[in-house]
Image 1 (cartoon, one colour):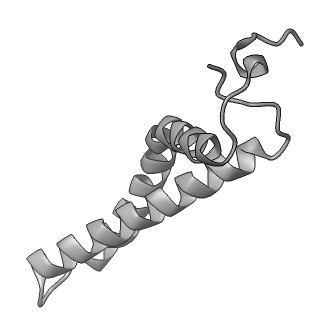
Image 2 (image 1 turned 180 degrees about the vertical axis):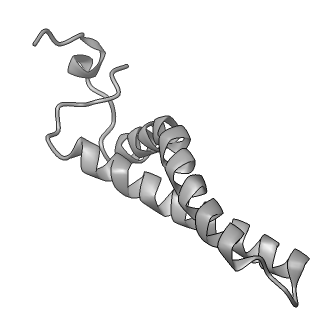
Length: 89
């Protein structure tokens, strides 16, 4: 089965799922660090660690976001024969 089903906006859906996943990851990490280090949270570490975590999260979550978006797409548009044929560009 091909990951891209011939839609021009397929990248946008996968990008949106990736953005949501990384934002949830950052919020959870921020909350955990705040709860563990309260009353003196390390603000500089949170700031720089958040930047690093957002970059790494975006890179590592993208393949999962792409397949998750494919699963959502398959719910609404069942697969057809053309989805299993390799397209030559």
